[in-house]
Length: 182
Image (tube, rainbow, N blue to C red):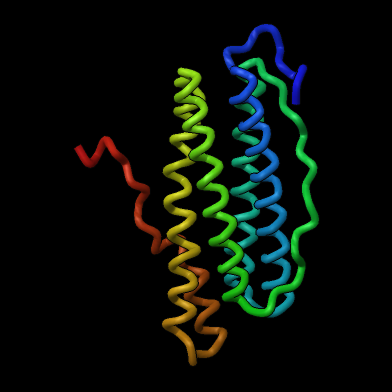
């Protein structure tokens, strides 16, 4: 990604490159959730499909937030190549397992943004990264809780499980706020 830096930007090249990598990660996550949503929809898991459609939109909005930030800071964005996600799943549980793996991967990469911005004394990008850190707490919780609910409801009808999963976002705890803890 060399030679992409504009002359009038406070973004250092390493931070810009990490942000561009995150744009791609968020785009791929959006597509992954869209594939899960359509699988759920095809297989009658309407509540879970609604959840995954919403997740797909949320990941796209995250991609756009980072993309706009880089542009607003005078940097250059590389439009990501989005990979074809897996299309078929064996179960609703597998969808949420893939979701959790994806969210953990995103969290690790968000942490790279915060670390790189701190090293570069780029406090604006650090603030952007910290917003995403809080977001990831909720995302990982939801995926973990969904897997727990599926396991707890083992033996129940898939309709009951799907209905419960459709309500999972409402059950998520409020994101941790360090300022409130003081």
